[in-house]
Length: 271
DNA sequence: GAAGACCTGCTA
DNA sequence: TAGCAGGTCTTC
Image 1 (cartoon, rainbow, N blue to C red):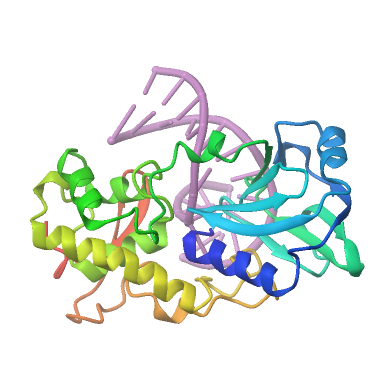
Image 2: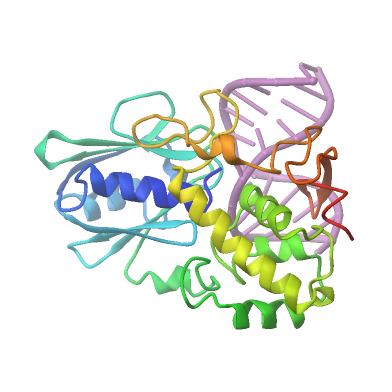
């Protein structure tokens, strides 16, 4: 579930809880496939005794910079989350100094923890992070114009721009009034500028609201304190199929675009 | 492009 | 019980 705003929210809350500067005293791995590329024993050994110096984020990756010089790179995929309190589906438990314990929770077991010497071995595959200056209008326009593909799968492609997932892609397309199936090289300069602006905007608002949690179940995105993300009430398109468009009042429609559920307004997002 | 794989749990 | 879910990777 987590996209850029959710990962950013979690990273900043872990910093706020004082995880930076703490030493890793022990590591318990309850679902071995989460760990790559080491064995559980090697992984635990490499982490034990090191200090988490810095927590940062690139795209949907969370980076723990360790005093050992290595970097622990965490991808939450569909259902990963962190908590300071024991719960169910805790796949990794790290005891830290000063009595703190970090629980990595992941119902669907898709998340991955990679311990690497150099983050670039993973990050080189990513395009610019959507909220950095490297992701500029010039770069975005060029990337869209030189391809001939549907716009939605392109903005979901992490090698082009890192951070957008299904929620914020639908939100950005709705905000920019661009139909998800439009071909990337058919967008006018004005449409490209509107979409570019919308991408930055929806992500920033998502962060401001602490991310998006759908429904009220237990398996969806949670902040570190267990709270739902406040962006749930601000979503304009995603998950609102059958409800009315806040802009034109017509009924939002759900379809499938490149194998992903896609909600849009058939009246304001014209093909 | 598309479809399947990886997983579990909620909803219709 | 079938279908679907915020992601990514592999294999057609």
